Amino acid sequence: MNSTERKTFWDALRRIRDNAPEHIQDLLATIKTPEYLCRFRSVNEKNLVQLQENKLYYSSADYYDDPFDTFIHVDFARIKELHAILSNQLNTDNPVFVNWLKSLEPITGISSEQLLNNLKEHPLDVSSFPDRIKQVRTVIQKNLFSICFCEDELNETLWLKYANNYKGFALVYNVKDQNTFLRGKEETCRDCRSLIERPFIYPMFYSEDAYDATQFALACLLWGTQIPPQILNFSYKAVMWEAERVSLIKKKCHEYDSEWRMIRPTMMPERTCIKMKPYKVILGLRMPEYSPTFLIICTDNSRYLS
Image (cartoon, rainbow, N blue to C red):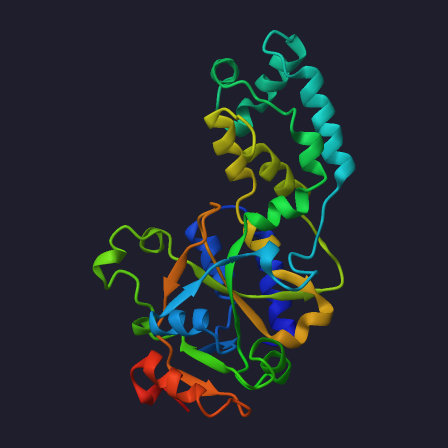
């Protein structure tokens, strides 16, 4: 996808606020997924084991080497203001707070009495907000898991950066062939969350303007507190599609990456993986003579090599 097409996708992603089928179809219609996507790897034991097992591990954004990954802006003044309001008014006997909960009824669909009962059973502790505000960007990044791909298997910059200066290899996946995805085809896959919540692959958008992720930052801070279940569910709905928006924007200077990302739908701290079978493996021009032998053993089928 060129920059204009990626901008069209980003505008559609900014508009979507629910999971209505017609809205999702409108979003997906803007994505021109190439037939093949690739990943560049260096030759080491970890990468060879993952190749042999057809495993691709999701990584949290705080591990990515790009300092501008999740190119976002957070309005710390607004967060601190909310903290002050919650700290001063978070009292189930406070009439101002009760009236505020009543005003939320049309939005949340939850009666103020239900919310009050929830707050009494699960007191909302915001005492950790001040310290967590300072680390909010890291908090956000630790909750976002994805797998990075590139649409250009000859991308020179990425061969240099991620394939050890052409001494590594590139894994090429046919993402339009369902046989590429191995989920559900093994006994160990029965309880895999990827079967329930299938991850999607999206193009990255590159911009000079950071995305305002204040709303998502607030939700991340709330998720780290003792929060009533109904308020927790409401906070999830309030930031629907925010994880995708925050994950899929990078600074304009990285446009050469031609990057795509598989976003993990489930937000949890554990690192998980998905199984995908490569269509082929491209060997780097400077790969040492002994390395191809290991790659053939790992793929267990020389037709993958080119």
